[in-house]
Image 1: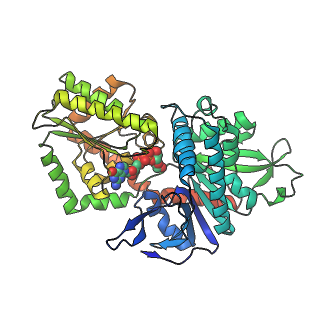
Image 2 (image 1 turned 45 degrees about the vertical axis):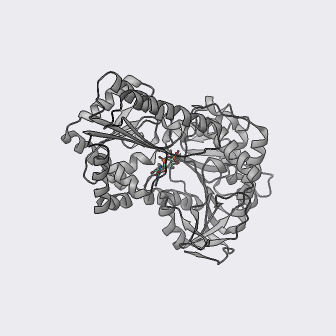
Length: 500
Ligand code: GDG
């Protein structure tokens, strides 16, 4: 699937993300090649990239290696190199130990280190330079996520001809939390280099606008932010959407609004209909000893996901005899994540201690209480698990969207199954027919779990139907199309405030 053709032309569409959507695979003869990694973003963008002559700029996942541009399955790939030290400072440090906890309501304490910030600036510059070098005149550049928030302004500075979009996959925190960041103004300036800034929730866009007003004093009108331009600036005329504001000053307008991300729903549906996967779902139930109720959690092992809160509620229900280990099994897939960051190591220890205690106290030889799996699985196995699960538990303390919730819904072609969903996950804005919970309220969570277990079939179907309608209509193709549409329209001086 890999060819050696160098991707060195000028492209009309440039996608920029920290990680490239490819994984290195080594065959029996030791020959290495690249295979597209099966994520929703790639699936959504692949057709657009092919049609538009696009390129994807990002890190290939291996430190200290310069990799030439290549093509994998019709996607042109332009790798950006990271050294081992940059991996530690820009990625594990500033991205995952400063921004990640800060943007998720400081569930864990963020670390602030000036060397990490310097590395973040340096690496963002490298990504911006790579994108600038690959983009054709007037091209559309779409930058993704919190690791690259300085890229939009860095790009605009060298290439004012470009149409620049940014999408934040994680929450944007309330001002009282955001304002902790020692580099809070630089990040805002970085993002405001974009023409369109997308967020998961309306509330995230609101938090961002407020930070802009508080830190920069710029005016906002609904989702439009007015960024003043210095009229002496010889480049002033080259900016897009330059208008005069109500004080007679020259401003550039930036659109900041919600574009809730989704999944390739059709793909989950067709996997759910495959006979081998349906058979595997039945086999999973068998292997668990045919409990009446299978509950499921699927998360990266991350402190934002509320895995501990879920286990606490489950353990107490067993303790209080409100559920019986013979009847109910909780399957928890916790896929390994960020294992070199200390907070994540501690989290793993805590979760595994809790699982061990619950199983030690309540499991029998024939029935596990918590089937805990610290592995990543192929998508087919995930779909079989979703099909086997009577109750899906999404108890995130803070989550940009949470795709797992949408995947569960898309998988349930049988219109059965109950979704328990945290209000703190972006998905709860759309998935109103789930059983919505506050994961901090352990008593409420316990009651809702019991309600889910006992819900009559009629009610399950009614809710699942409504949820499926949402997820099947608003899939990832629609999401990327609406973002790119907003960007293209912005290139013509038109800011769409809402979806058509
Ligand atoms: C960030 C934001 C936002 C997990 N374990 C396995 C596996 N997964 C897949 C899931 C799902 C994806 O990983 C996780 O996506 P989430 O949305 O649930 O969470 P984050 O990883 O935190 O993603 C989030 C998202 O970006 C998109 O904008 O929704 O809020 O935090 O697709 O299925 N997949 C396989 N094996 C596993 O073991 N194959």
